[in-house]
Length: 311
Image (cartoon, rainbow, N blue to C red; front, side, top):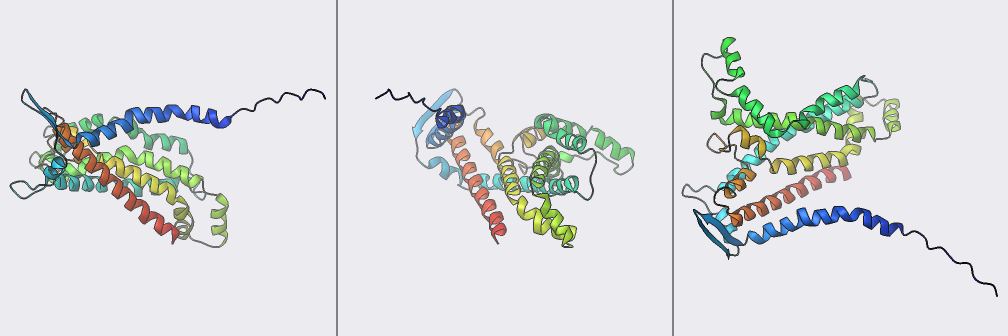
């Protein structure tokens, strides 16, 4: 009998696939998962600095969480107040952002309108997203300060006979924060929604036109249901970013959350414990609360939007 021909070993594509994605998982484990686990661990310890004295780390169990939800002398729970501030600031910026982005995405991708120069408009609406939030906040602080150009313009036009302290009024401070978040992120959301609409089979729009559907009927019966996955993604990512809001109100109010801490967010509250006291226990407890709140709201948004799609 002759010798059997040698069989060449095939390439294990599965093995190489694991090798190529390994750097991501390694980086995630080192720079994300490990700090998250350490944060949860620290939340069960008393660990802070009082003057030059280091207190702890001492295991205290759930004491840090109990302290967070214990009312102060006025009967107010600070973390609930700051959570309300954060949600209000997110809603004020995210709702106009998503509605405007959806309107622009439909406008630019409309086959009937055939807008020219789409690349130019995409670049223009995306440009604010490239500006650092701290620089954006400093710009608005300069514009609306007591000696800023906005006050000078209002007085020159005769619309005001005195200097307006925009940062002493709850409505104007929150309005400026919401406006900045809207301007910075609506371009990014528009690009995402445009990509989602362009991924829908154009024959569906042609069929709806042939059937005599109006623009509104086409939007609610064709575009919106098929755009739901991208829309859910944009809303959830906007929610996560909104609950982690820090840089805009921090810079605009110089970290004070003026007036009367009505613009202090959860992450600003957390940052206060990481200042001179280095209270890692309380900061860890706040981080865990923010994580749980983000997860619950994200699940609520996901379930509510996907349920409407299934119906």
